[in-house]
Length: 336
Picture 1 (tube, rainbow, N blue to C red):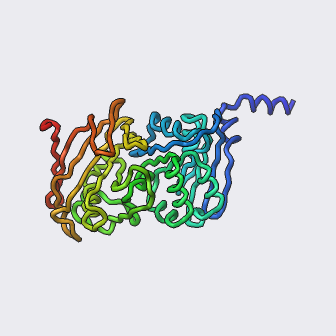
Picture 2: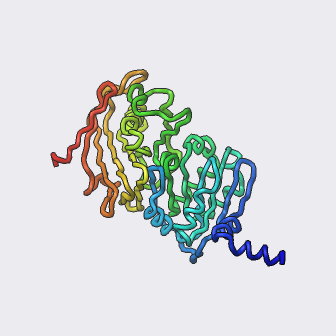
Picture 3: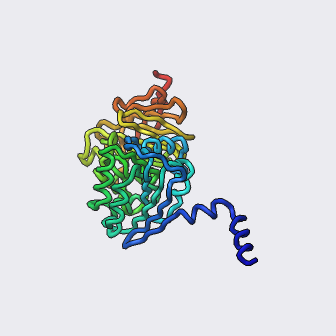
């Protein structure tokens, strides 16, 4: 009777209690923990094809996630984190049932040097960089196998995705947040504020040369600081012209290898250009810069952007001018 009672209790448990914990395999080592979950409905493996998934934060965009997984050719999606655990596994498990998922929580450079981590990354059919604090990625991965393997994976066609902090590290230029974040008023008041920590060439991502990114864009009013980022990049001689992609929350830009992108989700993406030096971009002086070109592309079924020409048939043209740290934004759509 005791055995029968235990069996009845087991049968009454909800389905997720019977499957999720049974399928998740946890592996730990010096500086890392891995959580692996088998595919819900495994599919035959095919060769991955590149796509870049750029997410603005505060929630994924299911249509964009499905497209990301479709490019993986089945196989393992490797999620990279520096904190927390395997929260992304269940989401990918449901939206992309043909893929297995492994979350690698890398908490030190020792973890980024670990053989197990390298093997998992080399076998990945897609790589997804989670939100959090991008300074951890820059600190832990620079000049380690993790950085090298991600770059070589993208070069051979493995899709890459990132949200919030994971978006921040996808451009040629990166706001690395090595001390803390910075607000638009702080960046505009002093573009050489100690919080304005910028780096470059962290990842070599197809289509993202000459670009810096920013997340939570409208919700956290980050246009001002993005313009300060671009002004600093040019002032410091890193480039003569630079682009910024600011992406709203629950919004995704999906970039294919041809340079064409979709904008999906609920918000908008802002594609910005600065092709000249600022009038004033100096230590402890308020920023002054004119003629920053912006194309605002609202997410939707026809929303598109061409990275090759930096144009959009669905974009709203705007211009930003900043004088003594104060920003004026003009909608130029009526002038077209």
